[in-house]
Image (cartoon, rainbow, N blue to C red; front, side, top):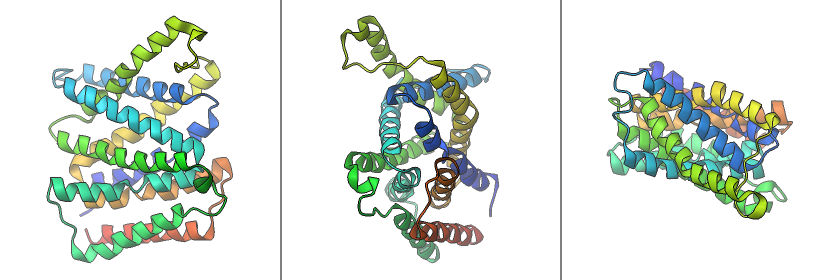
Length: 290
């Protein structure tokens, strides 16, 4: 049966698929992008937690430190991939993470896939491969570090999925978001402080871009689009099976190509269009059988 949680997943994926557009449109460095994202997410999550019944009593230091490092790695490789590769290609490789979800759920929760849904999962994966297929002289072939970053962004995204899955229904989405993004923000603060103390004397330290033209769009996007999209995704995780969640996540690939075409003029190939169609068909089939 299709419930609200199953509808929230594709909606959140469509919202979050617009992230590559922000990365490409704001002329600033990677460090500032990541700092802004962690600052906004942790601040909003802390504000919401402060008005809750339990407040910050359930926040775990281990989750905050470990989750913060995981998220910092994930965001770093994701921004590297999105800045080096076309939006559609970066999102396509990133969206191999539903496959990692299925493998992890099998070993961690002993979740098995119904045999009659396997063909549709194969079709969705084939669609993803059609979209992500590198061509000669494409950025995928010319920028191997960007390609590798995209692969690790998918693996680390799957690890974040299990971070929230293991929290369970009894813990709030915003507690998990505060631990994840607040932890990342806490790890970044010492570096920011050291860089401000040393100033321009140490060029190896990352510098924050404090210009208004960079911060205004980042604050607006992360507050109104990014936080809402991620809170929707994380809230749905405990209520949707890994298989359904993973296949629905492929909606983000299609949305990424649409946004890439509308805002960046990146025209998908015939093969990519066919892959998008395959993903849509697979999603419709699996939802109709659920």
